[in-house]
Length: 207
Image 1: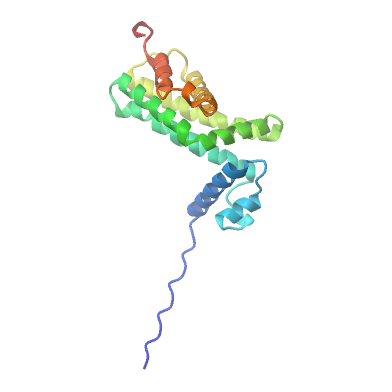
Image 2: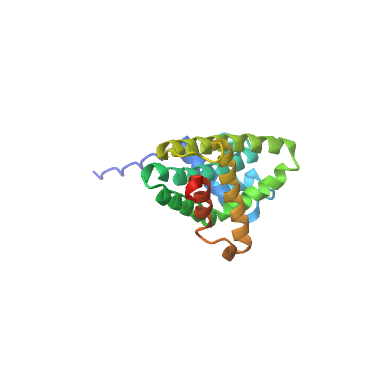
């Protein structure tokens, strides 16, 4: 009697986290290729190999998806830069490394910076979009503020500005230097971010 063929193993349904990751990755790719304004959720769903309903089950809409992508990139980059102050005891060495990591992010996240500029332009003309962007940026500044305050406490720093204001400065530097480097790379040396950070955290009498 011939042996019965084994039944194929049942296909595993992707977890919610895996589906969400597929959507974010697909959206990032499509947004980078054709811009935010020209991209529909149908196109994102198709690129992810999912239905539009699957996108809506994970995100409230295109704006929520855009803001999630932006938040994910900046939080990851800022976390990488600020944790170095806990890893390295020497302040000068830690500041140099933090600046290097942030400068590296300007190049590796060039697409993200272009999306931020496009979305900023959209937000300036749409109060609803502006409100969502402002809310997410406030949450981001709060996270960066906490990281700066923690780093200052670890190294006994007397910061020249309150941590919440320094958070704004660091984010503005990141965005501004990305714009200038995109226009003319030679105008923004690799060490510029580190040099500016050192001016911000070095005690006044040691500058």
